[in-house]
Length: 187
Image (cartoon, rainbow, N blue to C red; front, side, top):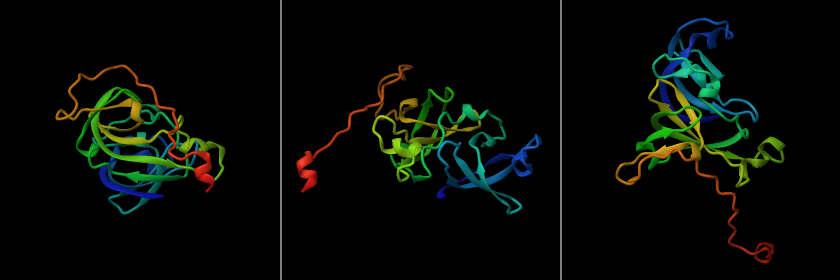
C-alpha cells in the first residue's frame, strides 16, 4: 500500500455492500493504493461514517457521481505489487488529452511507477524498457478518473506545446541505454 495525495470523490454505494447492484454514490476520501499483479489497481477510501474500504477499482470512483466501465478507466492491470507514487511538479499543472482508455480531456494528478517484484513473471517486465508502463492518474472532464500510459497522454501546456494535438500514436522507445561497458560493470 502507498499513500497518495488525498482526493475527495464519490464511490458507488454497491462497493460497501459486496457489489449487490445498489444505485447511487457517496462522498469518500481516496487516500492510498494497493496493487496485485494481474489485477486492477486497488484504491483505499474512507466514507463519511469513518469506514475504510480497500481495493476499490477505479471505475467505482468519480468526482461527480458518474458511472463507468472498468476498461474505460484502466486499460492495463497492475504490473507489480511494488510501485512508487510520484507527483510530477511540471505535469501537475497540465491539462491532458487522453487517447486511451477513453478519449477525454482532464487534469494530471499523479504517476505510478512500477518496480520489479523479485523474479515474479508478471512483474519481470516492470523494469524492461520495452514493457514498462508508468500510469498517470487523470481527473477526467467527464466526471471520472482514468489511468493512462505516456503514449496515451497529450499534455497541453500552452507555454511549451505549440503544435496542435495529434491522433497519431507514438511508439514506445525500446532501446536500453547503458553508459558502462560490460568490463566496467564487472570492476
